Each structure stands twice: as structure tokens, then as C-alpha cells.
Image 1 (cartoon, rainbow, N blue to C red):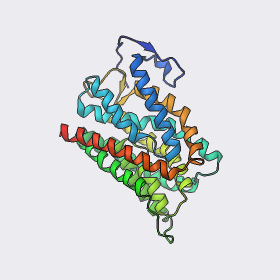
Image 2 (image 1 turned 120 degrees about the vertical axis):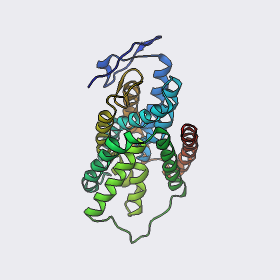
Image 3 (image 1 turned 180 degrees about the vertical axis):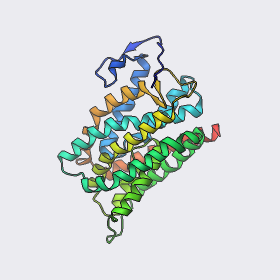
Length: 296
């Protein structure tokens, strides 16, 4: 697969270790700062709330790409794909911290993962490439609003509700993987409410959601790369729908703060933090709704 490279000025080589430093990416200082801050915040939220940070990343990467002259429709798609790719690294860092505390329900991970991979492949290899970016933006706005409402209300499940059998978890995994592939999020916006709805303790749900982020991201990223081949007018340093500069900087910074978020999840009043974050999500959903309606 061919990666398109162009030098840009003013320039600055990544000043810190990055899993993508071997590509010798050359970036503007302001762009590095923007992406680094986004990575630090997203990584912390991934560890704290188990949401993968995608809900924060997609709107901001869309803004950055649009500001660099990328077609609005393509900018939304690349933001979704790049956000998903960063979750590969964030989930590894976050789940290690949760696993040390014994909160990951690996039995649920094993039964949800097959459906997640199938659902993610269906979304990223087929539906994602066919839908316009404007419709994906509207779809993103709706589900982010739904997730924000779930966080804000903090509804409690019926005490008799239990985790479904393997077939039910396979279907649930398929839905999680498919919707994550369309939204560029790690699936926590569905998997955490789903697990708590099934009376899985909130700390276990957050930790297990972090573990599910890896198969979700891996399955979808492969699809984004394949389905994005042959596209024209891609920005410099692109691989399919992935924008590698954002991926390199955000991934590097997010893995630093994801363990801090996991630690904070067990120390801070998560219920209050969820409500604050829910209000932020409403603002981001409103922005993506505006972008979607503007480009329909």
C-alpha cells in the first residue's frame, strides 16, 4: 500500500518518541500542540470512563482537517477513521492499568469479541465507504447525544437483569462493532451502558469496555485502510482514510494519560464527572449536527 508524502513548512520533526517516528513525519509546531493536547485529554477519558476518547477526537480532528483545506465530506470520514486507529494504542495502555486492579471481565471480552470483529468489518469495509460524510456526521451527533443522556441520567438497571447467553453476546458484540465502525469510537458509548444494564458493576464495565477497544479498533482500521485505497485529494501523509500525523501524535500522548484515567476511575466521583462530560458531549454533538446539515 502506498502512502502519499509531501513536505510542509514551517516544519518540526516530532520532538518525542512515537510509534510512527520511523516515518519521520514533519509537522507544524501548532499542529503538534493541537494534536498532543487532544491525545492527552482523550487518553485520560479513555481510562476514566472507558469510552475510548473517540467522541472527543472526531469533532476536533474534523475541525483540524477542514482548516487545512480537506473536503468537508472527506474530513469527517478521515476523522472517524483516525480516531478509531488511536484506540488501538489507548486501549492497550488503559486495559493494562485496569487489569492490574482485577476489574476486567475477560469472560465477557471473549464472548463479545467475535461479534465485534464481524460488525466492525461490515461497517468499515462496506457501509462506511458508501455513506456520505455528512450522513456519518448526523449519525455521530445522534449517538453521542444518546450516550451523553445515558451518562447524565445514570439510570439503574432492574436488579434481576443478567448478562445474556453466548448467542446474545455475539449479537450485542456485532451491534457494538458496527456502530463503532461508523462513529470512530471505541464502543464504550454502547458497551458500558449495555453491561451496566445487565448489572455488571460500573468499574468492571469501564474496564471491560477498555479491553474491547482493541478488537473494535483493529477490525475497523483494517477496513478503513482497504476501503480508502484509490481515493483522490487525500491530505499529505494519508494511508487510506487514516491521517497518520494525527494518529502518531495522539497515540503517543494518549498512552501516557490512559493509565492516569484508569487510576482516577477508582478514586474520583465518577458519577459527577460523567455529568460534566455529558454536557461537553452535547456541545460536540451539536457541532457535528451543524457540520452534517451544512454538507448534506
